[in-house]
Image (cartoon, rainbow, N blue to C red; front, side):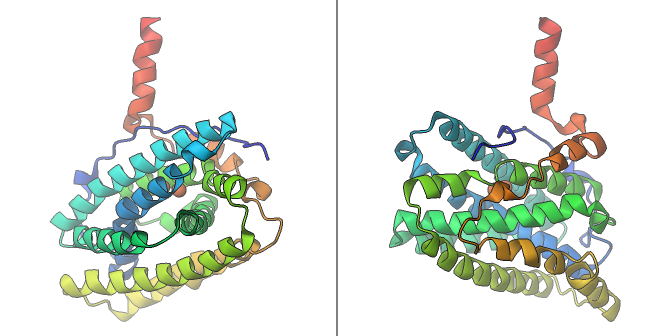
Length: 285
Ligand SMILES: [Fe+2]
Ligand SMILES: [Fe+2]
């Protein structure tokens, strides 16, 4: 299937130093810990996504897919780098996201050891679907990010856009080189379980280490964020199940218009060093 968008990294930079409150999401310790836990998993997690796709780079013959792999690696590399900056800032505010990064990095090292390449790639494909449907939810319901500190909100929306742009890359690599849907389905179940347990434990860790004990109002706010009318868990349930269809492809859901919507409504060129480079180039011409 043809890819409806171009996969090309943007070099963004966000002013995380402007985030000065530990509970940067709605003053809610749980919502903040949830986003912080997610952010902690990105640098090591995306590093493994890159590595597992790289294992197959030489086996892919389609020049278009090869180009997309380069774009995928570039995008995930930048996400990882920016989340590292965010995590550093959270550490300064008393949320030890960097400790979680190290914890996950150790776990991934252990996981990689005796796993065949195809299992590593199948896990990446599963996680890429989860990030893509969460990204779709965020861009379709940007008001669910109301109350987030601006630099973090901008980071998450940019990350969401690029997750949509490259959502089919790992899938296409897997299908062209392995083509084993049963393995994809099995790994998705494992990946989902591990993801839910990990994020929950990481939230507990962040709250416990910072001695932050949420009150009832915060619990209600977080429950609404997950399970309310526009709640992320509630709305991604259906697209999650699509993955288990025998003819599923990530671009069955044509949501590339969200990329344009982001450019019109949320894109902040001040933070995009790629566009600056282009600007200078344009001036020289
Ligand atoms: Fe990413
Ligand atoms: Fe991704």
